[in-house]
Length: 273
Image 1 (cartoon, rainbow, N blue to C red):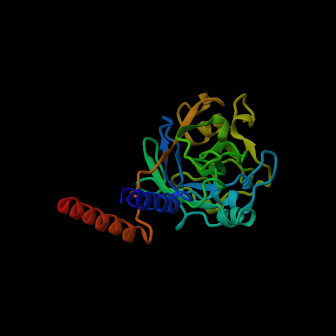
Image 2 (cartoon, rainbow, N blue to C red):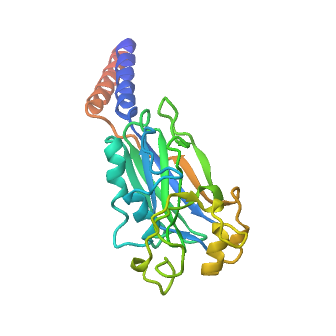
């Protein structure tokens, strides 16, 4: 009897493991604590196998990147970047990290809980969001392999990712000016098209000895922004395994019921003896 019970128990465990081995639920928490007053739009998050290269330094911005970089709070989240991701990685996934009111203000956080269907394949993350106030500035990783959030076995790599000044970009799609900027009193639809290429904000010469952050300080009065360096931590992203109950797969209930019956029968025989 003990051998049969052990085999049934092993079968139940095997079914439970098989039912959960190919998926993982994770929490992605974006923390905005830059201290300068910059906010970000809902943060687009792509989970992929490493082939989704959203943008490249020195290249022209795609339509998806231009939309993210120029439109701070549309009626709906940006809808052009997902088709670009799916065109190169049909089995990739995506979502948005929202703040309490949509955008994530300085001092706020937001969390996206996402079920990753195959974490042994979709192991990497890309994060994209508009950096406000600005005309066409955004945060993102131009290296699709920069952030590994699962190992080769599909285990979550719990970590805190630091987003520094070197991860803030100018899309080169709109002239940097107060006119048409994402700034109170301005109509974001009125900006002048620039037709440039993507460059790190820290590398832009503002014409007065400063960089792109200095230009944002001068244009929008962001106190101290000119002191931001390539290594200044502006945001952090926490990657954690989400605690979720494991549902019983089909068939496990019958096996568990069988265990109970066998246990009852075993006790009955013991009493007769």
